[in-house]
Length: 230
Ligand SMILES: Cc1cc2nc3c(=O)[nH]c(=O)nc-3n(C[C@H](O)[C@H](O)[C@H](O)COP(=O)(O)O)c2cc1C
Image (cartoon, rainbow, N blue to C red; front, top):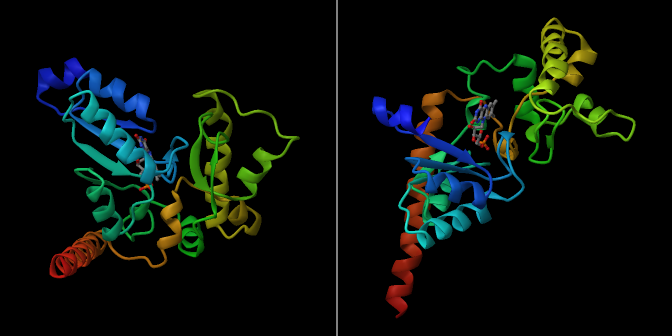
């Protein structure tokens, strides 16, 4: 992939969920590292964004690599973006925050569940793809967590089990089947707890900008106060 990217002038980005993975990717020369904490929707590791980002930034410094880091996992506000940039990230990479926008392909039933969900309503489960991925908790994911449940198959086989069933669940839930509505789930991160209204993708970007500036001003004021005291 690196060779193809270089040949065609396309930047290569690698998404990692552990420091060791980041170091290995930087060693082969990826152009951008996306460092995703466990809060993230979809496939993720076990370390929180707050710890993983500085861990990777420090490891890159130690190996003399200047690969830009985009922080990911749980980032749904501009203040969080400012926080990860304060920790050394060059920017933020978001997935979940788009899922409740009107532009998103998310099924209306799942979208409503996401808008109502708290940050504790997601689970990191192997039940969808065979590898741990974070998704909305539902009786579907709960059933896979019970001791009576079979072990999920290794990737990619588990998707052959889950996807046809979950597609049917989506279809039935949209047709008004109450049981299917309960089972319905989709990948989303812990940031879902902060996603409480459906606003357009453009409005999300504008909100990010405003919140980022407010956070930066708050920090600047703190520094100014300290300078005034010193
Ligand atoms: C619905 C959904 C699908 C995703 N699919 C992929 C994917 O195919 N490949 C990938 O590298 N990451 C995928 N991700 C992970 C995102 O690229 C991103 O790292 C993650 O969403 C960031 O965390 P956040 O959801 O808390 O914003 C997906 C995430 C979501 C929510």
